[in-house]
Length: 566
Ligand code: MFK
Image (cartoon, rainbow, N blue to C red):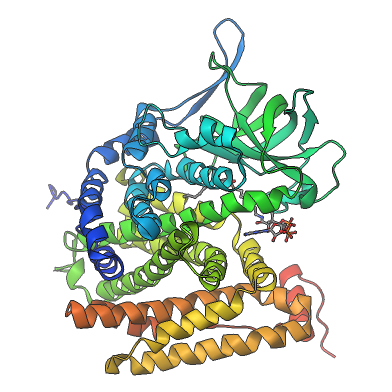
């Protein structure tokens, strides 16, 4: 026994190994679209466990380095990244991870196709998915707000499948004054006298500083305070000689995770920039970008969940303890089954959202579907991020001590997943965005209608009890909102997180039931049915009623304020 060597987990083709992905695509896509895109997904599923893994290892081992000066003392602010990181960029271009969303060769299904690719690409990408998210968001913002010149200049590069032509974009929103409260941004834009602007300020978290261009916010001199006084700008980082255009890199951030991704503090000292979409309302305009990156966030969260389960499942068949493989240990099997239920719930929510995004962008969706998409975006982002962290944490534990040891590659999953609930808006910011979508875009009624329509389509007798539970949760959600509104803003905001969770879980339940019925009837497979029943047996809408007393008591607990016994 002294010679015992444990076999580690192995990954199979991540497309063919993914029953739910294949089943969902078969169910939702027109047969000819499915037949057309499947070979590409199959190929990428293989790359994700072969050449991409080697690139990822290289990118993670050789973290980016900031070189401020050249040997002769000239300021260069070079950021050196690993060959693997650069190769992952080329793979992204070749595989059209951004492009398939914009070439729209699959009509309204183009986003589903593209996001399925992202879902396969992301877990082996050393989080190159982050620059891609911002690139995709920038393409969308330029599509909506850019003039013809900007489209000709930048857009075609962002959506190119030629690695030599492909550009990535940064999205510089965060300043020292506020990661969440973007309206406090201090960067100033001064007219350059030639129709353009020069930007002055500090950008505090700029991921993917090696990109070709960036979209950012600045306040034109004399413009009002707050987010409406900000304007949206486009800039290119380097001149024809490759020198940064009055951009100085203060330092790279030393982050918990996403270590292959160069994230920098930047000083803009007269950086030439071009106004996009006219003056003012910068946050509203850049929302077109961050709504895309939030969708990426959810797709990537799902990717991590799936990767974690693939590793834990394979290992369960290899690791023996107490005379039995883990896959024959009843409690271990229960834990893996719970993870699969989380995965199936997250999957349904995320892919439903990609379907609505594709419809919205090709003008084939209804106004109601557009409103549902607006509400699903923050809900899916916030809920799947929490799921990814919880699932991946459980996956680490399922490896015992090995899951805590860096060179297994497993701890990285948890460190990277932790960012999903922070960047692109924290859980609280997104819970409040859920309210914004309801209050400003009237998204609640179409959302509840859509949920009802999904439920109405489920007629499988074995699912009747689950349908009833989802219906009851939906009724409680429906009743909560007007009551909360009548109680006042503090009540609504205090309850917003649980409300958002309730919307997510209830809608997930309805979507799971729909898929369960399809899979049972058309594939003679009960697995999604069991997952749906288990999901719906939970408390789907854990709403709270934070009245004056509740909030007073919360303050006492949260801030350790006095709470006297009367
Ligand atoms: C793995 C892949 C993941 C991708 C990684 C990408 C890495 C990128 C790194 C980063 O950039 S991280 C930084 C991310 N930062 C954020 O996400 C900001 C979080 N804060 C918020 O979202 C705040 O809620 C917000 C800045 C929007 C608050 O701003 P305001 O100005 O105080 O809010 P207000 O007044 O409600 O909204 C201003 C306008 O924007 C309104 O429109 P109008 O001018 O027409 O009234 C809003 O309706 C609109 N708006 C706000 N959020 C919107 C939106 N419109 C559409 N969708 C939204 N989500």
